[in-house]
Image 1 (spheres, rainbow, N blue to C red):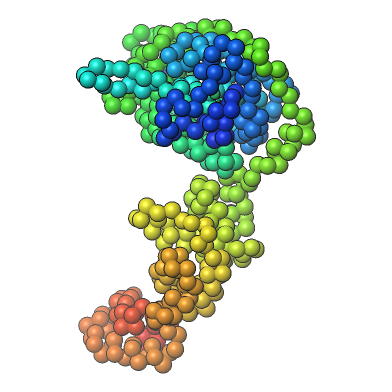
Image 2 (image 1 turned 180 degrees about the vertical axis):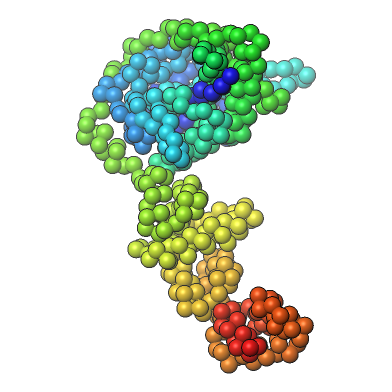
Length: 482
Ligand SMILES: [Zn+2]
Protein backbone atom coordinates (compact mmCIF):
# COMPACT_ATOMS: atom_id res chain seq x y z
CA UNK A 1 0.00 0.00 0.00
CA UNK A 2 1.44 3.35 -1.03
CA UNK A 3 0.16 6.44 0.81
CA UNK A 4 0.66 9.97 -0.53
CA UNK A 5 -0.66 12.93 1.52
CA UNK A 6 -2.51 15.56 -0.51
CA UNK A 7 -2.33 18.87 1.34
CA UNK A 8 -3.68 22.26 0.40
CA UNK A 9 -3.44 25.42 2.47
CA UNK A 10 -5.85 28.29 2.91
CA UNK A 11 -4.01 31.25 4.35
CA UNK A 12 -5.75 34.33 5.74
CA UNK A 13 -3.76 37.52 6.11
CA UNK A 14 -5.01 40.64 7.85
CA UNK A 15 -3.89 43.73 5.98
CA UNK A 16 -2.44 46.58 8.01
CA UNK A 17 -4.45 49.31 6.30
CA UNK A 18 -5.50 52.28 8.44
CA UNK A 19 -9.24 51.70 8.03
CA UNK A 20 -11.48 48.66 7.71
CA UNK A 21 -12.59 47.01 4.48
CA UNK A 22 -16.01 48.60 3.97
CA UNK A 23 -16.19 51.52 6.43
CA UNK A 24 -13.89 54.21 7.81
CA UNK A 25 -13.44 52.64 11.28
CA UNK A 26 -9.83 52.10 12.36
CA UNK A 27 -8.64 48.60 11.49
CA UNK A 28 -6.55 48.44 14.70
CA UNK A 29 -8.04 45.77 16.93
CA UNK A 30 -5.10 44.56 19.01
CA UNK A 31 -4.68 46.38 22.33
CA UNK A 32 -7.81 48.55 22.06
CA UNK A 33 -10.90 48.55 24.28
CA UNK A 34 -13.60 46.15 23.02
CA UNK A 35 -16.25 47.51 20.66
CA UNK A 36 -14.69 50.97 20.33
CA UNK A 37 -13.86 50.71 16.61
CA UNK A 38 -17.32 49.99 15.23
CA UNK A 39 -20.02 51.73 13.20
CA UNK A 40 -23.38 50.80 11.62
CA UNK A 41 -21.60 49.31 8.55
CA UNK A 42 -19.26 46.89 10.31
CA UNK A 43 -21.98 46.04 12.83
CA UNK A 44 -24.31 45.21 9.91
CA UNK A 45 -27.12 47.54 11.00
CA UNK A 46 -30.02 47.87 8.53
CA UNK A 47 -29.52 50.50 5.84
CA UNK A 48 -25.73 50.80 6.26
CA UNK A 49 -23.83 50.85 2.96
CA UNK A 50 -20.43 49.21 2.42
CA UNK A 51 -17.75 51.16 0.49
CA UNK A 52 -14.68 49.09 -0.50
CA UNK A 53 -11.27 50.18 0.76
CA UNK A 54 -9.24 50.94 -2.38
CA UNK A 55 -5.83 50.44 -0.75
CA UNK A 56 -6.86 47.01 0.54
CA UNK A 57 -8.00 45.96 -2.97
CA UNK A 58 -4.68 47.18 -4.43
CA UNK A 59 -2.71 45.30 -1.78
CA UNK A 60 -4.58 42.10 -2.54
CA UNK A 61 -3.59 42.52 -6.20
CA UNK A 62 -0.03 43.42 -5.17
CA UNK A 63 0.29 40.19 -3.22
CA UNK A 64 -1.22 38.27 -6.12
CA UNK A 65 1.29 39.76 -8.55
CA UNK A 66 4.16 38.95 -6.15
CA UNK A 67 2.90 35.35 -6.22
CA UNK A 68 2.88 35.33 -10.02
CA UNK A 69 -0.93 35.45 -10.26
CA UNK A 70 -2.98 36.96 -13.09
CA UNK A 71 -5.52 39.65 -12.17
CA UNK A 72 -9.12 39.10 -13.24
CA UNK A 73 -10.37 41.83 -15.57
CA UNK A 74 -13.41 42.37 -13.42
CA UNK A 75 -14.17 41.26 -9.87
CA UNK A 76 -17.07 41.60 -7.51
CA UNK A 77 -17.99 40.94 -3.90
CA UNK A 78 -20.44 38.28 -2.79
CA UNK A 79 -22.29 37.50 0.41
CA UNK A 80 -21.34 34.23 2.05
CA UNK A 81 -24.32 33.47 4.22
CA UNK A 82 -23.88 31.76 7.54
CA UNK A 83 -24.73 32.45 11.13
CA UNK A 84 -22.14 32.92 13.81
CA UNK A 85 -22.37 35.13 16.93
CA UNK A 86 -19.28 37.16 15.96
CA UNK A 87 -20.66 37.88 12.48
CA UNK A 88 -23.28 40.55 13.16
CA UNK A 89 -24.54 40.76 9.55
CA UNK A 90 -25.27 37.06 9.19
CA UNK A 91 -23.08 37.01 6.10
CA UNK A 92 -19.47 37.74 5.24
CA UNK A 93 -18.50 39.85 2.24
CA UNK A 94 -16.01 37.89 0.16
CA UNK A 95 -15.16 37.02 -3.46
CA UNK A 96 -16.25 33.65 -4.78
CA UNK A 97 -16.83 33.65 -8.55
CA UNK A 98 -14.34 36.37 -9.48
CA UNK A 99 -11.45 36.80 -7.05
CA UNK A 100 -9.04 39.67 -7.69
CA UNK A 101 -6.22 37.32 -8.80
CA UNK A 102 -5.83 33.70 -9.92
CA UNK A 103 -3.20 31.09 -10.92
CA UNK A 104 0.10 31.83 -9.24
CA UNK A 105 2.84 29.79 -7.64
CA UNK A 106 5.35 29.69 -4.81
CA UNK A 107 8.78 28.10 -5.15
CA UNK A 108 9.96 25.95 -2.27
CA UNK A 109 13.45 24.66 -2.95
CA UNK A 110 13.18 22.68 -6.20
CA UNK A 111 9.44 22.24 -5.81
CA UNK A 112 6.52 24.46 -6.75
CA UNK A 113 3.15 24.88 -5.11
CA UNK A 114 0.49 26.32 -7.38
CA UNK A 115 -1.74 29.09 -6.05
CA UNK A 116 -5.36 28.75 -7.10
CA UNK A 117 -6.48 32.26 -6.14
CA UNK A 118 -6.19 35.18 -3.77
CA UNK A 119 -9.31 37.10 -2.89
CA UNK A 120 -10.42 39.95 -0.68
CA UNK A 121 -12.83 39.58 2.21
CA UNK A 122 -13.60 40.94 5.66
CA UNK A 123 -12.65 39.51 9.03
CA UNK A 124 -15.21 38.54 11.66
CA UNK A 125 -15.44 39.70 15.27
CA UNK A 126 -13.91 37.84 18.18
CA UNK A 127 -15.61 35.80 20.90
CA UNK A 128 -13.97 36.16 24.29
CA UNK A 129 -14.70 33.51 26.89
CA UNK A 130 -14.49 34.64 30.52
CA UNK A 131 -15.50 33.46 33.96
CA UNK A 132 -17.54 35.89 36.06
CA UNK A 133 -18.47 34.88 39.61
CA UNK A 134 -18.02 31.25 38.68
CA UNK A 135 -20.30 31.70 35.67
CA UNK A 136 -18.90 31.06 32.20
CA UNK A 137 -19.69 33.91 29.83
CA UNK A 138 -18.96 34.62 26.19
CA UNK A 139 -18.45 38.25 25.26
CA UNK A 140 -18.19 39.54 21.71
CA UNK A 141 -15.73 42.16 20.51
CA UNK A 142 -16.66 43.59 17.10
CA UNK A 143 -13.46 45.61 16.65
CA UNK A 144 -12.07 42.99 14.26
CA UNK A 145 -15.34 42.81 12.29
CA UNK A 146 -14.66 44.17 8.80
CA UNK A 147 -10.86 44.27 9.01
CA UNK A 148 -9.46 43.62 5.48
CA UNK A 149 -8.50 40.01 5.01
CA UNK A 150 -6.85 38.38 1.98
CA UNK A 151 -7.35 34.67 1.55
CA UNK A 152 -4.77 32.79 -0.49
CA UNK A 153 -5.80 29.30 -1.57
CA UNK A 154 -3.16 26.86 -2.77
CA UNK A 155 -3.68 23.86 -4.99
CA UNK A 156 -3.22 20.58 -3.06
CA UNK A 157 0.39 20.26 -4.24
CA UNK A 158 1.90 19.91 -0.77
CA UNK A 159 2.92 16.39 0.22
CA UNK A 160 4.24 16.68 3.78
CA UNK A 161 3.90 18.67 7.01
CA UNK A 162 7.43 20.04 6.53
CA UNK A 163 6.59 21.26 3.04
CA UNK A 164 3.48 22.96 4.45
CA UNK A 165 5.65 24.76 6.99
CA UNK A 166 8.12 25.84 4.29
CA UNK A 167 5.21 27.13 2.19
CA UNK A 168 3.91 29.21 5.09
CA UNK A 169 7.35 30.64 5.87
CA UNK A 170 7.83 31.61 2.23
CA UNK A 171 4.37 33.18 2.11
CA UNK A 172 5.15 35.11 5.29
CA UNK A 173 8.45 36.36 3.81
CA UNK A 174 6.77 37.60 0.64
CA UNK A 175 3.99 39.33 2.58
CA UNK A 176 6.52 41.06 4.83
CA UNK A 177 8.70 42.05 1.85
CA UNK A 178 5.78 43.86 0.21
CA UNK A 179 4.80 45.34 3.58
CA UNK A 180 1.05 44.72 3.56
CA UNK A 181 0.86 42.88 6.90
CA UNK A 182 3.07 41.77 9.76
CA UNK A 183 1.80 38.22 8.99
CA UNK A 184 2.27 37.07 12.59
CA UNK A 185 0.86 33.57 13.02
CA UNK A 186 1.05 33.56 16.83
CA UNK A 187 -0.69 36.94 17.04
CA UNK A 188 -3.34 35.90 14.54
CA UNK A 189 -2.68 38.39 11.74
CA UNK A 190 -1.81 35.36 9.57
CA UNK A 191 -3.95 32.26 9.97
CA UNK A 192 -3.88 28.97 8.19
CA UNK A 193 -6.29 26.14 7.53
CA UNK A 194 -4.77 23.01 6.04
CA UNK A 195 -6.94 20.70 3.92
CA UNK A 196 -5.72 17.12 4.09
CA UNK A 197 -6.58 13.79 2.53
CA UNK A 198 -4.65 10.78 1.30
CA UNK A 199 -4.13 9.07 -2.00
CA UNK A 200 -3.88 5.36 -1.28
CA UNK A 201 -2.59 3.00 -3.94
CA UNK A 202 -3.23 -0.66 -3.23
CA UNK A 203 -2.28 -3.12 -6.00
CA UNK A 204 -4.12 -1.71 -9.03
CA UNK A 205 -6.66 0.27 -7.04
CA UNK A 206 -6.51 3.95 -6.07
CA UNK A 207 -8.54 5.40 -3.21
CA UNK A 208 -8.90 8.93 -1.86
CA UNK A 209 -9.79 9.36 1.81
CA UNK A 210 -12.46 11.94 2.86
CA UNK A 211 -11.26 15.55 2.66
CA UNK A 212 -10.67 17.21 6.02
CA UNK A 213 -10.24 20.90 6.70
CA UNK A 214 -8.44 21.67 9.96
CA UNK A 215 -9.48 24.86 11.80
CA UNK A 216 -8.02 26.81 14.73
CA UNK A 217 -4.34 26.06 14.21
CA UNK A 218 -2.57 28.99 15.84
CA UNK A 219 1.15 28.35 15.35
CA UNK A 220 3.64 27.07 12.78
CA UNK A 221 4.44 24.06 14.94
CA UNK A 222 0.70 23.50 15.33
CA UNK A 223 0.28 23.34 11.55
CA UNK A 224 2.99 20.71 11.30
CA UNK A 225 1.72 18.62 14.21
CA UNK A 226 -1.91 18.86 13.08
CA UNK A 227 -1.08 17.68 9.55
CA UNK A 228 1.04 14.79 10.82
CA UNK A 229 -1.72 13.80 13.23
CA UNK A 230 -4.34 13.93 10.48
CA UNK A 231 -2.22 11.80 8.10
CA UNK A 232 -1.96 9.11 10.78
CA UNK A 233 -5.64 9.36 11.74
CA UNK A 234 -6.82 9.05 8.12
CA UNK A 235 -4.51 6.10 7.47
CA UNK A 236 -5.96 4.26 10.46
CA UNK A 237 -9.56 5.26 9.62
CA UNK A 238 -9.15 3.98 6.06
CA UNK A 239 -7.76 0.68 7.25
CA UNK A 240 -10.72 0.26 9.61
CA UNK A 241 -13.64 1.60 7.56
CA UNK A 242 -12.42 1.88 3.96
CA UNK A 243 -14.41 5.13 3.68
CA UNK A 244 -13.52 7.23 0.63
CA UNK A 245 -14.01 10.86 -0.39
CA UNK A 246 -17.45 11.99 -1.47
CA UNK A 247 -17.88 14.59 -4.19
CA UNK A 248 -17.34 18.28 -3.35
CA UNK A 249 -17.75 17.77 0.36
CA UNK A 250 -15.33 18.19 3.17
CA UNK A 251 -15.46 17.51 6.88
CA UNK A 252 -14.34 20.24 9.23
CA UNK A 253 -12.10 19.25 12.10
CA UNK A 254 -10.85 21.46 14.90
CA UNK A 255 -7.32 21.34 16.29
CA UNK A 256 -6.90 20.84 20.03
CA UNK A 257 -3.43 22.19 20.78
CA UNK A 258 -3.49 20.89 24.38
CA UNK A 259 -4.28 17.31 23.44
CA UNK A 260 -2.37 17.51 20.14
CA UNK A 261 -5.25 15.99 18.21
CA UNK A 262 -7.98 16.90 15.72
CA UNK A 263 -11.70 16.49 16.45
CA UNK A 264 -14.76 16.51 14.20
CA UNK A 265 -16.67 19.83 14.11
CA UNK A 266 -18.94 19.69 11.05
CA UNK A 267 -19.61 16.90 8.58
CA UNK A 268 -20.04 16.96 4.80
CA UNK A 269 -20.01 20.65 4.12
CA UNK A 270 -19.99 22.06 0.58
CA UNK A 271 -19.84 25.56 -0.90
CA UNK A 272 -23.54 25.38 -1.83
CA UNK A 273 -24.35 25.50 1.89
CA UNK A 274 -23.36 29.16 1.92
CA UNK A 275 -25.81 30.37 -0.77
CA UNK A 276 -23.33 32.84 -2.25
CA UNK A 277 -24.88 35.76 -4.11
CA UNK A 278 -23.48 39.09 -5.42
CA UNK A 279 -23.50 42.00 -2.97
CA UNK A 280 -26.05 44.37 -4.50
CA UNK A 281 -24.60 47.50 -2.87
CA UNK A 282 -21.10 47.28 -4.39
CA UNK A 283 -20.55 47.66 -8.15
CA UNK A 284 -18.11 45.44 -10.06
CA UNK A 285 -14.49 46.49 -9.61
CA UNK A 286 -12.18 46.88 -12.58
CA UNK A 287 -8.55 47.93 -12.56
CA UNK A 288 -7.10 49.30 -15.82
CA UNK A 289 -3.95 47.77 -17.31
CA UNK A 290 -2.05 50.94 -16.35
CA UNK A 291 -3.23 50.66 -12.74
CA UNK A 292 -2.15 47.01 -12.58
CA UNK A 293 1.26 47.92 -14.02
CA UNK A 294 1.66 50.69 -11.43
CA UNK A 295 0.95 48.15 -8.68
CA UNK A 296 3.44 45.74 -10.24
CA UNK A 297 6.11 48.46 -10.27
CA UNK A 298 5.58 49.07 -6.56
CA UNK A 299 6.67 45.51 -5.71
CA UNK A 300 10.20 45.52 -4.27
CA UNK A 301 12.87 42.90 -4.94
CA UNK A 302 11.39 39.64 -3.58
CA UNK A 303 13.19 36.94 -1.55
CA UNK A 304 13.85 34.64 -4.53
CA UNK A 305 15.35 37.47 -6.59
CA UNK A 306 17.44 38.70 -3.67
CA UNK A 307 18.64 35.14 -3.05
CA UNK A 308 19.85 34.76 -6.66
CA UNK A 309 21.50 38.18 -6.62
CA UNK A 310 23.40 37.48 -3.38
CA UNK A 311 24.67 34.23 -4.87
CA UNK A 312 25.62 35.73 -8.20
CA UNK A 313 27.12 39.03 -7.05
CA UNK A 314 28.65 38.04 -3.71
CA UNK A 315 29.34 34.34 -4.21
CA UNK A 316 27.34 33.38 -1.12
CA UNK A 317 26.33 29.74 -0.71
CA UNK A 318 22.68 28.59 -0.54
CA UNK A 319 22.62 28.42 3.23
CA UNK A 320 24.09 31.89 3.85
CA UNK A 321 22.07 33.58 1.12
CA UNK A 322 18.91 32.00 2.48
CA UNK A 323 19.58 33.13 6.04
CA UNK A 324 20.24 36.68 4.90
CA UNK A 325 17.08 37.03 2.79
CA UNK A 326 14.70 35.24 5.17
CA UNK A 327 14.09 38.40 7.21
CA UNK A 328 13.52 41.58 5.20
CA UNK A 329 14.79 43.85 8.01
CA UNK A 330 17.96 41.84 8.49
CA UNK A 331 18.75 41.86 4.77
CA UNK A 332 18.07 45.60 4.49
CA UNK A 333 20.49 46.26 7.32
CA UNK A 334 23.07 43.97 5.70
CA UNK A 335 22.67 45.86 2.42
CA UNK A 336 23.20 49.18 4.18
CA UNK A 337 26.36 47.81 5.83
CA UNK A 338 27.99 46.71 2.57
CA UNK A 339 27.37 50.14 1.04
CA UNK A 340 27.09 50.98 -2.64
CA UNK A 341 28.83 48.67 -5.15
CA UNK A 342 30.79 46.51 -2.70
CA UNK A 343 33.36 44.04 -4.01
CA UNK A 344 32.29 40.38 -3.66
CA UNK A 345 35.06 39.96 -1.02
CA UNK A 346 33.76 42.89 1.03
CA UNK A 347 30.17 41.62 0.80
CA UNK A 348 31.20 38.13 1.80
CA UNK A 349 33.25 39.41 4.73
CA UNK A 350 30.27 41.47 5.96
CA UNK A 351 27.86 38.56 5.40
CA UNK A 352 30.08 36.41 7.62
CA UNK A 353 30.00 39.06 10.34
CA UNK A 354 26.19 39.30 10.11
CA UNK A 355 25.60 35.55 10.11
CA UNK A 356 28.26 34.89 12.75
CA UNK A 357 29.12 37.41 15.43
CA UNK A 358 26.15 39.73 14.92
CA UNK A 359 23.50 36.98 14.75
CA UNK A 360 24.96 35.23 17.81
CA UNK A 361 24.92 38.51 19.69
CA UNK A 362 21.30 39.25 18.68
CA UNK A 363 20.16 35.76 19.69
CA UNK A 364 21.81 36.05 23.09
CA UNK A 365 20.72 39.60 23.85
CA UNK A 366 17.24 39.33 22.25
CA UNK A 367 17.91 42.77 20.76
CA UNK A 368 17.13 43.79 17.22
CA UNK A 369 19.39 45.93 15.04
CA UNK A 370 18.69 49.59 14.42
CA UNK A 371 19.42 50.37 10.78
CA UNK A 372 20.19 54.00 11.67
CA UNK A 373 23.16 52.88 13.75
CA UNK A 374 24.77 51.05 10.83
CA UNK A 375 27.69 52.90 9.20
CA UNK A 376 28.90 51.32 5.95
CA UNK A 377 32.23 53.17 6.27
CA UNK A 378 32.99 51.29 9.48
CA UNK A 379 32.41 47.94 7.79
CA UNK A 380 34.63 49.01 4.87
CA UNK A 381 37.45 50.12 7.21
CA UNK A 382 37.24 46.88 9.14
CA UNK A 383 37.34 44.86 5.93
CA UNK A 384 40.41 46.79 4.70
CA UNK A 385 42.23 46.28 8.02
CA UNK A 386 41.54 42.55 8.04
CA UNK A 387 42.67 42.30 4.42
CA UNK A 388 45.92 44.07 5.31
CA UNK A 389 46.35 41.72 8.32
CA UNK A 390 46.27 44.69 10.71
CA UNK A 391 43.28 43.18 12.49
CA UNK A 392 42.66 39.48 12.89
CA UNK A 393 39.32 37.91 11.97
CA UNK A 394 38.81 37.11 15.66
CA UNK A 395 39.34 40.71 16.71
CA UNK A 396 37.02 41.90 13.93
CA UNK A 397 34.21 39.84 15.47
CA UNK A 398 34.88 41.36 18.88
CA UNK A 399 35.04 45.00 17.87
CA UNK A 400 32.08 45.06 15.47
CA UNK A 401 29.55 44.66 18.28
CA UNK A 402 31.19 47.36 20.39
CA UNK A 403 31.37 49.61 17.36
CA UNK A 404 27.61 49.17 16.84
CA UNK A 405 26.88 50.10 20.44
CA UNK A 406 29.11 53.14 20.86
CA UNK A 407 29.02 54.32 17.25
CA UNK A 408 32.80 54.37 16.85
CA UNK A 409 34.98 53.10 13.99
CA UNK A 410 35.86 49.46 14.84
CA UNK A 411 39.43 49.98 13.63
CA UNK A 412 39.85 52.85 16.08
CA UNK A 413 38.42 50.66 18.85
CA UNK A 414 40.90 47.92 17.96
CA UNK A 415 43.82 50.40 17.99
CA UNK A 416 42.79 51.91 21.32
CA UNK A 417 42.47 48.47 22.88
CA UNK A 418 45.88 47.37 21.61
CA UNK A 419 44.27 44.78 19.36
CA UNK A 420 46.10 45.71 16.20
CA UNK A 421 47.88 42.70 14.85
CA UNK A 422 51.66 42.71 15.25
CA UNK A 423 53.29 41.96 11.93
CA UNK A 424 56.69 43.17 13.08
CA UNK A 425 58.83 40.07 12.73
CA UNK A 426 61.42 41.32 15.24
CA UNK A 427 58.84 41.60 18.00
CA UNK A 428 57.29 38.24 17.15
CA UNK A 429 60.71 36.59 17.09
CA UNK A 430 61.40 37.94 20.60
CA UNK A 431 58.10 36.39 21.85
CA UNK A 432 58.78 33.14 19.95
CA UNK A 433 62.14 32.74 21.71
CA UNK A 434 60.48 33.23 25.11
CA UNK A 435 57.78 30.68 24.27
CA UNK A 436 60.35 28.11 23.10
CA UNK A 437 62.40 28.58 26.27
CA UNK A 438 59.38 28.17 28.54
CA UNK A 439 57.85 25.12 26.83
CA UNK A 440 60.57 22.51 26.41
CA UNK A 441 58.10 19.58 26.45
CA UNK A 442 56.05 21.08 23.62
CA UNK A 443 59.25 21.75 21.69
CA UNK A 444 60.34 18.10 21.89
CA UNK A 445 56.78 17.06 20.93
CA UNK A 446 57.05 19.29 17.88
CA UNK A 447 60.38 17.79 16.84
CA UNK A 448 58.73 14.33 16.85
CA UNK A 449 55.48 15.51 15.32
CA UNK A 450 55.49 18.84 13.39
CA UNK A 451 51.66 18.88 13.38
CA UNK A 452 51.73 19.75 17.08
CA UNK A 453 53.02 23.26 16.38
CA UNK A 454 49.51 24.58 17.09
CA UNK A 455 50.23 24.45 20.81
CA UNK A 456 53.27 26.70 20.52
CA UNK A 457 51.44 29.11 18.21
CA UNK A 458 48.67 29.25 20.81
CA UNK A 459 51.21 30.11 23.53
CA UNK A 460 52.73 32.82 21.36
CA UNK A 461 49.31 34.32 20.58
CA UNK A 462 48.57 34.31 24.30
CA UNK A 463 51.85 36.05 25.08
CA UNK A 464 51.00 38.72 22.50
CA UNK A 465 47.47 39.08 23.96
CA UNK A 466 46.04 37.92 20.65
CA UNK A 467 47.74 40.65 18.66
CA UNK A 468 50.40 38.63 16.80
CA UNK A 469 49.79 37.82 13.15
CA UNK A 470 49.26 34.03 13.46
CA UNK A 471 50.65 33.27 10.00
CA UNK A 472 53.84 35.11 10.76
CA UNK A 473 54.02 33.52 14.21
CA UNK A 474 53.96 30.06 12.66
CA UNK A 475 56.65 30.92 10.12
CA UNK A 476 58.98 32.34 12.76
CA UNK A 477 58.47 29.41 15.17
CA UNK A 478 59.22 26.95 12.37
CA UNK A 479 62.32 28.91 11.36
CA UNK A 480 63.63 28.94 14.93
CA UNK A 481 62.91 25.27 15.60
CA UNK A 482 64.32 23.78 12.43
ZN1 LIG B 1 -17.10 50.40 10.90
